[in-house]
Length: 478
Image 1 (cartoon, one colour):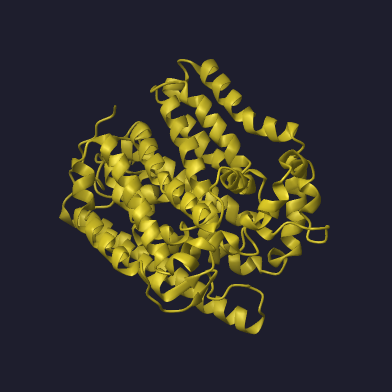
Image 2 (cartoon, rainbow, N blue to C red; image 1 turned 60 degrees about the vertical axis):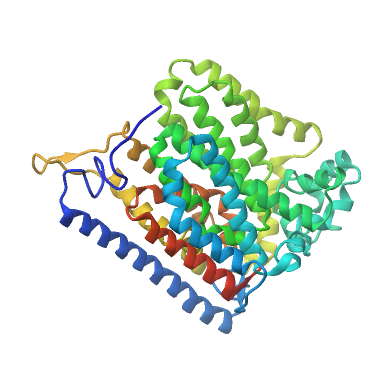
């Protein structure tokens, strides 16, 4: 296991090396604030320009641009719990994360993330916040009765994707491979039917994404960095959209796929590669867009390349064998992933995707990401990018390249890989609006950049204030 005793936010290739004085650290802090101010201006521009476009052209199809929400200041049953959790995490989160044994820390992180997501959801009340979220006309629970014959439904799945086809699927079912609705069909079959059970499934499973990211960061970078990231993964503004959204469940599956791969490639046990492959295969059949998690997976393989060289054949065989399970099962059942994706692109432009202007959403989507990731993540990402850039060495103008074996460099590569996947999704034009939930699987990895920040309590407070403000001022659509 790697050890790392350098204070977080310092180290080779960062803004503040251990030998730097207070002046250098203050300059790094100012750069963090500049980055956050720039991100705030991006959000403000998205709000102002978006409201103008929606009021004059009515082409954005969102109530409070850039978010799919409406302005509605309110409180609810979850308000006291959310305030208490925020205060406790800010006050004691960093200390607890540093002191707890590793396995109890993982359990506490999951419990804390679950409680935070649940409390924020309950600000809208049990019915509006959880029980009906997955039962609206766009959602998966609307199609439960159409899966009485699961093999038969899978064979004809693609016939109902286009909006002008007979009995076309609701938007979310049409926009995702069948593993997404099938999850809720199977929950219904085992007696956990209805929006309440489905919502709690997404909350409790989705919260494990925080644990998965911690496991991966510890394996690929260091335990010290994982501990520093833990409070930021718990107290995430993204939690506003994780309760109760199926995308939170997708985020957890994708996160555990990466985490198991990280364990496999860093020599913990090569057998984890089979589990990683299985979950990567499932991820691709939960959401077409999550094929971009391959960018993160390739980065994990790069970071574990020294271990991979020792037994590449075994790891590759197990990874591919695991990955083949889900695609093979669905293909044998009659579902054609490639045909479905081709039809989805047509369906996308038949609906709001064909009306929403790319020229606005290509940058306003990033404003949505700022809101779900929070100011701490913006500052952490600034430090991550700076860490990967060459900088003058101590002995003169000669540039010093980042060291790929240094824990902070490795974490920086991981979070920037997730950022790269998100940017590819943005440029594709297949994610116009609603990215505050669609991009949750990428955002979970960005949150780990909080590990680079000094004064974690101040940054955690900023994260909490943003999440509470969003949840109490807006009525979110998802």
